[in-house]
Length: 137
Image (cartoon, rainbow, N blue to C red; front, side):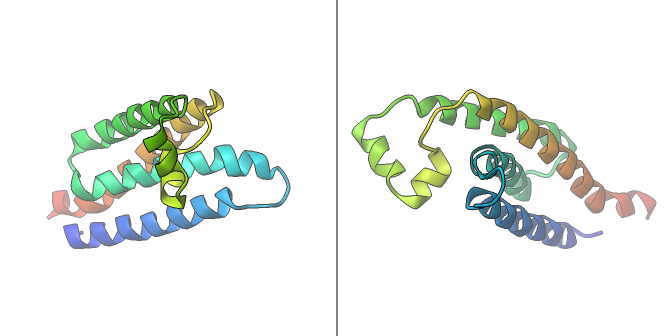
């Protein structure tokens, strides 16, 4: 399979996981608080793993991407404890709220780990899509 085809699978995956993330973020049914706060965080991590994979596709990157996504999102989580005016202005926008978050929660770390683990599994699947046929030719 070509790099172009692999890119197609990555972009389709990004669209699906982004849609699922927004669905979870704005879900209003049973257990909506979990879906809105924690379930969406799982998709947030997977999204960033896939986004980085668009640019870095080596076998080594499959391990490094989820680790870096986890580290960076944990840093962002701790930043939610800090409320300087410039960060509050960013968080007041929809994009700032979605990217940086607004409220610190210890439970987020568990869901970040789950999301990065699932992201790692997904990247492994996508890596296979890009290299399985090359090794056979």
